[in-house]
Image (tube, rainbow, N blue to C red; front, side, top):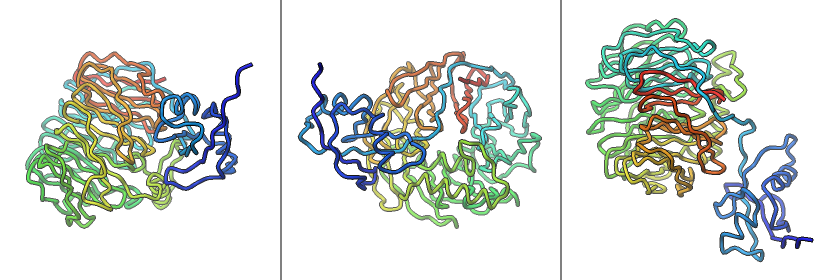
Length: 470
């Protein structure tokens, strides 16, 4: 008969340090499934919820004995604090096959994006057009012509009623996704090409009429898309603005090649400048990005009946994503590092995330805000703790630069697109490659996972758009 596992003394605790229940004597071979039953009974959950468990920032995957006691200096004599974190109720299935290859663009596909409810898909290309695709038949629906040069960036209004595009011709254009027609003429004013677009969140403005655009000319312009005019220009950067984000508190974040990040108040005045990078800042991500992107639409796909209801639902989802703490910001740079910021409380970064050997091209917070993924030209994707900035894992497998990363809606999987022509799906539980998706004939520049999790779209240098499903 095998020996009984020695007991351990354990205390449950939430991520923000509050104790749950009394200290317990548990067998040291206790598994995450058994801990889940325990914590659900402590919290008196009517519907059992899935949880993940951590001791000293190490996740318990097999058992406390195998994952913690066997690999660290902790012993069965210590009182072990078990930090529990709720996981998403729903599970997204990994995409495994290419269901359709959609041709139509005559130059590289530079951006792809699903609408907030996942019902529509748009792509921007070097052939100067924006295309809107029908997802039920997986065929082209509309070709939006109007730009004179490459379309560099596209962004859906969080209401899903308008699609914005920015191009090398210095113009921002607005499109009606149902008809494919241009909504008026171009929004003009920028002196150089458009680098990024960001819409005002639904819970601040449920009509979704205000849009921010950043440009190589060093400015950010805020537009009223209903009145079709520039409300104000945010000029303070001394070089190209590479990225713009509209945060849930109404402030606008801009990153620039002048090595700084500037935060602007909703009225256009400068709130603060964040200094810390030693080279161009390429990319920004907010811990609430997923909630801001999807607005009032959650994983059930229910749609609000009015603007007021949309505003209330979006506010509820945004507050849940914040979890009682301020929004966190992460910036990635040509100096090979990322900086994690808590802009509300400090002008200094919370942590400096070092480890990449080449420039950081893209960063993204997981939908639950707990992890950050970074894509770099050093062929790797790295994972970091979204609160402390601590290094978690390196995901290796790509054989060329990684251009973009994208999370599944349940935060359990990550997708990366690379110069090596493949997409890779990574499993966050094992921190290993789950599925490789070859199929593109050349570099993959853009990828998006639909908010509902049912499909992935990717585009790149081979001029086709591929839809991937389970």
